Image 1 (cartoon, rainbow, N blue to C red):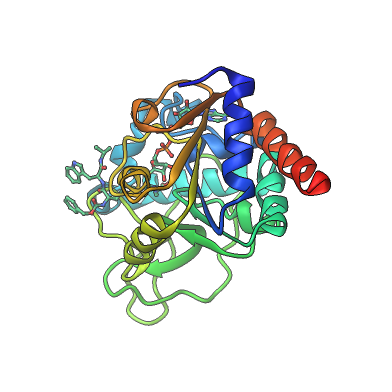
Image 2 (tube, rainbow, N blue to C red):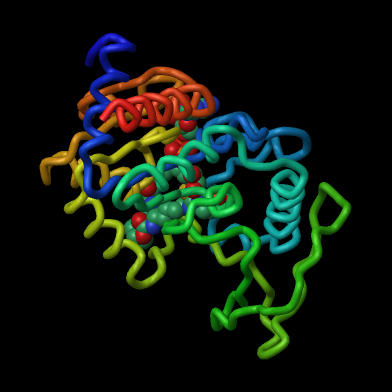
Length: 258
Ligand code: BV8
């Protein structure tokens, strides 16, 4: 690991000459938008539940109203806030380099909202829906209910089974082709910028290691050391909303002086 300014310079240098950059983000990327991370204690009446119990098929089958109510609550949080400067910096960086793909574990859609044009959602999207039993895509508008508690999910218009969010729950496989594309990108990128992930959830947590072993420079931005930190090239300790604009400013300075 290196000192902060030395690390920042090294990251800017690697990014400035890269052909392909992958920006791999986790829940910490949206923390400064006011969205609690998975490791944060849950708030309010959800405090007594473990997200890893709620974000499961079994949890939904056991108590559809509890899980559907939790996703409705989270949809409300996301709808009431917006992407922050860090998301905007990732979108800006895309315009400064040859090719940049965002590979996110987040389901909030903030990268797209901030202007990133190539976003691979490993774990789906909270505002997309399907039915539990047959994955029928649910095109109808699913309004955010003004309640913070349990809520019964609507029935699928095709088969009647409960509607669920189109997200990847624990114990579920990632959508076909998504992991394959993510691994292809990890193997071929020149730089992987890993932002706001504890590196605990597989298979997402394996991607930085694939990138590094394939010769990429791996740069991590996190407020705290993560499960990945000992295996990255550069660790920039700090908030995404502060460090990412610093990286982009450095890349812009290099481009201006080139
Ligand atoms: C799979 C969508 C094959 C839903 C999510 C036993 C049985 C079954 C499975 C497993 C098992 N053991 C292991 C597994 C595999 C399991 C897994 O990895 N479990 C872990 C917990 C041990 N994985 C799976 O099940 C995956 N599927 O493997 O299929 C399979 C199938 C069956 C059996 C075996 C294998 C599917 C995983 C997907 C789960 N769905 N999300 C929803 O969101 O509701 S994951 C969920 O956690 C979110 O997507 C979140 O993004 C993600 C990961 O967490 P992080 O993003 O890293 O967030 P976290 O809170 O952990 O950390 C935040 C970080 O940000 C911290 O480091 C913090 O310091 C930092 N930070 C905070 N603020 C800031 C910041 N950084 C920068 N700036 C800041 N301001």
